Length: 238
Image (cartoon, rainbow, N blue to C red; front, side, top):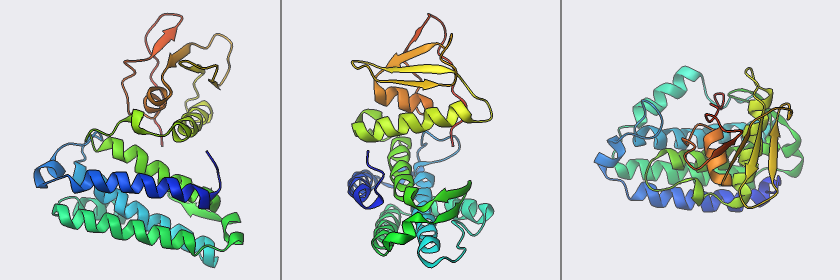
């Protein structure tokens, strides 16, 4: 998958359209139903996605102007906004998602070429502005799955799946609790090595299921381990 933020916007637009179609199918009972995220309803997930778009607009503004603009006013404000917005009627959720998606697209279009070289202060620390469009795409695709509404890892594009797989593997290999694994994609010679290959178990399966398992969105039922043994538990993802 390209790292060019402007080329990636086509992927963001397509993913947003899919998300909006799912959101448009929800009634009030659906929104009050549980998502795949502990303690969050589908309404919480949709509210988070709208506020996340606002946050990325703030970071794009920071990159474009050179001013220090935080992604969120504070973590407490982020939590409050999601909680407050979670119980809105379906039409309000849908309008909010559309409005904030449009603002994000407009903010990307307003970026001068040189601004993509900036570094901004995201929620978890400094981040290259050039990766903001990828970050928004990842939020949409992963949280669409979290809505538990029929959208699964197999619906991710091949390019998105492989980039997410490599990113999650790199995160786990270098994080606070590093893990050594060899990830082997079914039907190909494609492997991703995490940590020290020597004596590391090999986990094999379809690429979407490997990626979902690595980010805590899949139980790994389609995956196999060599040598035989229990499927390892990946560290916590971002």
